[in-house]
Image (cartoon, rainbow, N blue to C red; front, top):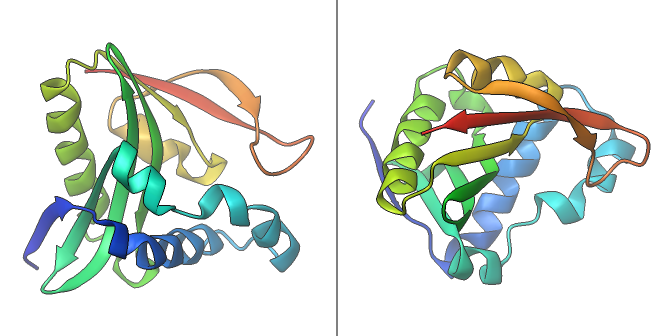
Length: 151
């Protein structure tokens, strides 16, 4: 499977949002939970234009993406999602490796990751370390893992 990665454009916002929702729903969250996450999972054109947002492409189709906010020497991984039908095919890893290249080029030394609890293992397998928990941006009373990665 030949995956290429390109910078996302404002025109990609709807597709990226759809992938984020579909990928998050893989974990079996109910409709109410997903609705509460709507704002947090919506990728805006403003976000794409102001942050490091890259899309994984299979032929001409976006099949995953990441978004990172950079304020060197710190970065925040805001999003990393892969289309559910292509999970466990190495696309997430390809996106992560690309993210690290961009982070290093922008002099990012530490990447913070507020991870879905179901994705924590993925990030830890890549070398991220859990440093605590933070409140969910969408669900009152819910706490999610906070991880860091030293580039």
